[in-house]
Image (cartoon, rainbow, N blue to C red; front, side, top):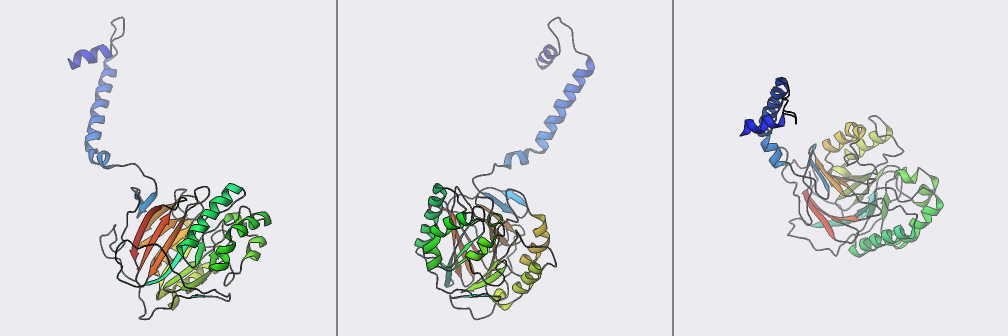
Length: 354
């Protein structure tokens, strides 16, 4: 039966058969295709499509994480070995803010109305908010921004960190929109930001804020959190640059080594838009070797997460689906809650200090 059907395939309407060489090639191709499928059957069976968020473990993308799913980082999922904790001192700072460099930092105490899911053995130190890419040049975008600001205020988080693109274009008009929406936030919370590309390194942006140090890169201490703010838009991040050398010194300090350490900047190192090989070669080794616990960035306007060498890399969402994250910083661990524009929990990631 098979040979009769094959004969009809290679016979035209006038009864003329195709040359024997074509029949031979067809059979060879059929045999090779069948062999390749069965030799790779496991790959085909286990390959799954990406879900709603980009999640990467090591250098490979894995399935998206569903709502309310917790990702514990006590064990490195790549090696299967416990992640070594960074050295720490026996005493922890109080939940007040201080800054490095010549700038003046603000102080305050963070608290939160969000309930923890599950018991946490160590003591809560400070509650922090993160968001990014709130730039606006329309009333609708102002409303999106105002909604997220209200969510952050309701959470009780203090301080608040912004990962850049606060303004639409670095002009006075975009500054005025930002200031109008964030007036209560900036006057009742300590507010810190990293410069984004939409700030355009403008004097309008820098004149609007008073940040520590040179305002491009600086660090602040809040309770058990040491937060480092970098500028990877207008300031070099290459090995040996002023920012690189400052970061190396800051990460080596007791302020960083005795606390949970986070880093925030605008352009993501690992993202759906591609990886930044320059920072992978310069900054990432410093993060890895000096106990950085998590990194926050923006720019791509979609929530993403990567877990590389024991470090969580979070990319914040942005306009027009602006969301935010709340990080609860404990003595030895972090709970990182991410919410969407409707204030629904997208994901909770819990991890221990490295």
